[in-house]
Image (tube, rainbow, N blue to C red):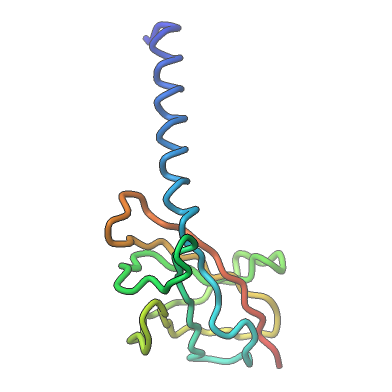
Length: 130
């Protein structure tokens, strides 16, 4: 059983850990290359990752988790499979996915950036049209 002191120390440590994790993500920005595209199967969804301090693209990040769903339209359960595609330019990460109906889709990415100790997590929203 933890003492009051141990509980307080643990809470402070966790608070610092959360702050440190969020600091890394704040240095980077994700944006869709094409914020609007036609709905369909095997759509290419490309995301640009930039360093906010320098404004430069971030090449060679390791994308290890992705998700595409319709959460912006209240349908998070409408999830599509995501497959990586080769990058055509530095800092742009492309994926093949299905956007089966018109509406807004959210892509959530978790990446490791070289030299950044924390995982960078970001979201972009694209609109699929008819």
